[in-house]
Structure formats: structure tokens, C-alpha cells
Image (cartoon, rainbow, N blue to C red; front, side):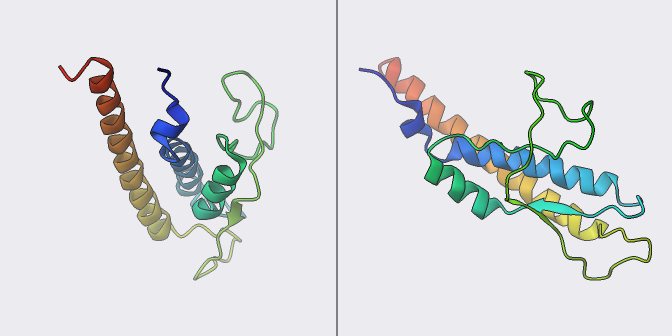
Length: 138
């Protein structure tokens, strides 16, 4: 009997991938908190996950490439973010045009990191259960 990992892991594999990409976007925002004119971005997680689930495959999200040498995938191809990447509207815009509000970015990063860890733990438990089944419940 063959195991279908897509069915066994469900949408959690895609959620983990999206959480990782969101962490990258939020970290970039925090790193550019003092860069004049930098516009904070975020991934609309619900939209991206629902689009991914509707497509039935793994989401292809990555950071926007503004230079050919920046943000390359392991295979060397540059990705472009899907429509799920949005600019964040600041509560208190700065005079230099930077829209990063560090306290908000840090809170979003911490929340996303916690959810990433929860998804990792869930997937680990699911895989342990599958391993137990394959080994005959030893």
C-alpha cells in the first residue's frame, strides 16, 4: 500500500513554506527599519494559503528580486512574489518615507515564528505517527 504524503500532511506542508517566506519578509522589514524610503511589506497569509490549497500544489513565493544577484533560489532561478505580498500601511509614517514600524514588525515576526514552530511540531508528530504505522506499532 502506497502512502500519499500530500494527503497525510495536508495543508500543513504549504503552511510551513508560507510561514518561512513570511519570516523572511518580516526580517527584511526589520533590517531596513532605518533605510530612507523603504516600504514595509507582508504576505497576506490567508490569501496565499487559500490560493495554494485551491491550486493543489506548493506555493511558489519568494522575495521580489530587484537585482540579478539578490535572493536566488538553490537552483539559481529568481522568484517573484505572488499577489499575496502587500505593502503595510503605517500608523505613523516617518518623514523619510520609511513605513517600517519596528514594534509592529517585531510582534508580527514573533507571532509568525511561534506559528511556524507549532506547524513544525504538528508535522513532526504526524510523521512520527506514520513511521510508527510503517514499523508495525513497535
